[in-house]
Image (cartoon, rainbow, N blue to C red; front, side, top):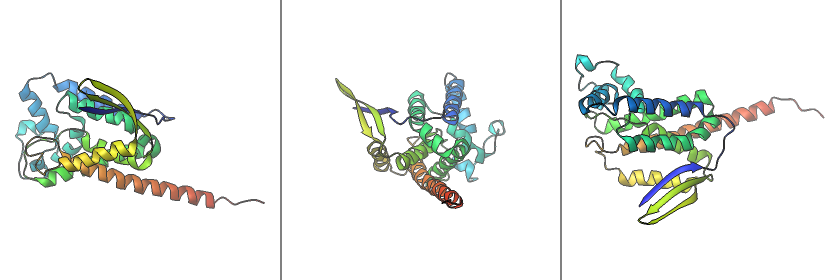
Length: 239
């Protein structure tokens, strides 16, 4: 069975330049190392991926791999992906949901939102096993934050979903709260606590990114509404 969202019916008035830029940078970064030998890819992931043991000071890289401070790997890891499906899945989700969140927040706030939720996701996964030497790569945590924000902002938006089961396939239009609610429920069901240590999917990062996205967008949305109310009340009325 295959179930995959590929578009939404929620148009924007502005071009999502930040989302497009992130998609371009992730794609270029992936193409830069994916056709190299395996040991070169391993070096890239160790150097620019997020390694908990390096973040918390339990381990060190060799001098040849010390290109950036370990803390910066939290950011650089968001531009790396472990395979074609990893890249395509993440970038498709960002393409579908990122434009609406970017337009709502504005480009500067969206940049902050994206990397803040991605950082929360990375630390959540790292805290599970601070001594792990397995690199975590991918934009999944930050994109999970975008999904959380989209759920809060546009719960009733229609999402186009491709469904395939053996010889049956069809495109459905499903409300965002069902698609994204189902997605986060699946993350909780799949979470076992040792995914990073086994080199698997970082479900803790997905969950933390999603939750931080819900919380942050709620705060920013509330602040924006309060600002509008204050602005209106400050304008004198005439009779």
